[in-house]
Amino acid sequence: MEKKSKMQAEKHLTGTLVLSVFTAVLGFFQYGYSLGVINAPQKVIEAHYARVLGIIPMDSTVPSTVPGTVPGTVPSTRAWGSTEGMLTPPEDPAASPHVLTMFWSLSVSVFAIGGMVSSFTVGWIGDRLGRVKAMLVVNVLSIVGNLLMGLAKLGPSHILIIAGRAITGLYCGLSSGLVPMYVSEVSPTALRGALGTLHQLAIVTGILISQVLGLDFLLGNDEMWPLLLGLSGVAALLQFFLLLLCPESPRYLYIKLGKVEEAKKSLKRLRGNCDPMKEIAEMEKEKQEAASEKKVSIGQLFTSSKYRQAVIVALMVQISQQFSGINAIFYYSTNIFERAGVDQPVYATIGVGVVNTVFTVISVFLVEKAGRRSLFLAGLMGMLLSAVAMTVGLVLLSQFAWMSYVSMIAIFLFVIFFEVGPGPIPWFIVAELFSQGPRPAAIAIAGFCNWACNFIVGMCFQYIADLCGSYVFVIFAVLLLVFLLFAYLKVPETKGKSFEEIAAVFRRKKLPAKTMTELQELRGGEVA
Image 1 (cartoon, one colour):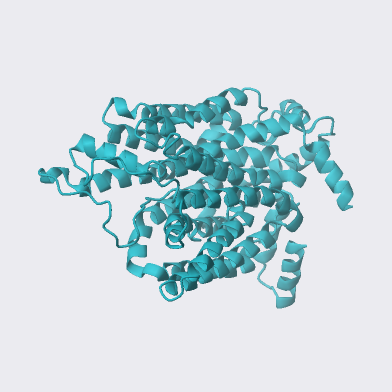
Image 2: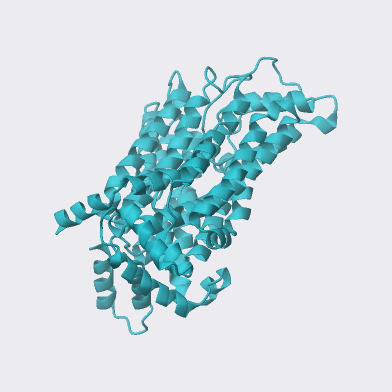
């Protein structure tokens, strides 16, 4: 039976489907590149800001860069509490180093603000224009944003970069909702999880490429940093033209527009010679349910008992991804490698990025074999143990030099377990938890939650790290324990299930007369 299912999945993997998914996830590649790229040439750009703002650095030379320490957060190459590399107070008090810090922090965090704002419009633009046309239109934002950053030296660099990052954030907020929506709707059930993990693969690939290109002998130098910042505009142009070759989502055509024949044509392009009637019948069932649900707003998702449990799960998986501590690991990895005596810690940090990418690829193959829920649980458990090991290594580092290697191993294990489950799964499981009616609103609110948590981590981590020192990862260990318990009790298995079957899981969970035996049977059915 398993062999037959595998053969059917391979049969459904057509060239058009591969092209469509690849083209869509280019949006997540831009997202990952934008997360990592601003950190690579940090000191170079800060030195340029200082010259523009009239703030004089302590030395006149441009310091070397440290690539990609924190995807999506405000980075620092200083050890916690260190004053090395600070700027001398200028004669003009208005042009103080605090102004420089403010502009740099805004340059990084405005990206997340843009994503938070635009994520609410995902459902509207996706339904109004269709999935493919919507991705086409929003690409204009990416092209404009990257153009502003690429031309930063021609004007007030801090203003152009902040504006470019904000516009790029608007694009990524829309794209991070539209892409999972499209990929989940064009993918056959047997491949939905594997293709869904490609979102995370695109993100980590974007981060890794930005780290490598950000090395000072490539583009992370005083001459080339504007090109480095604006380079993901090339991916935006590529996606724009490839989208012209991609079929519209058959689910959108059938359920939203009622265009049966066009939906069949789209399915045949995506599935090859397979009979589309089985999926058409599933869509008809979903359409009837969506018609009975009427239009579902964001407010109704929270007020209706029908959706409440699914919404809570959708939000918690997003919160667990951002508050797991992964950005903190990236943030502190370079400093730990330095303390461990690594000659070139920037390359060790890039090594973390390579591990990040490799294990995301592995998760593509694991997710359909092990299932979403079990991988999510295993990832959280592994991250929890790694956070504990990280804390022990940092606390005892002053007493035992070899503890730095414990911390190094913990970093790599933390990243590995993140990419096994908590990294990729939140991006596509939200689209699986909801049927056609509430899906756009659910993706919008989940996207906003993810971006908001991203922003909170970016703005608050340095302050918490300065306050807690080596014990900062205890906070993440406690949070991971909470997320682990929640996932064990509430997150359902969506592997191989239709949207109707997944919805039925939550309906069964809400029955008032639930015995412990029934709950155990339900949980057993979920992980089977």
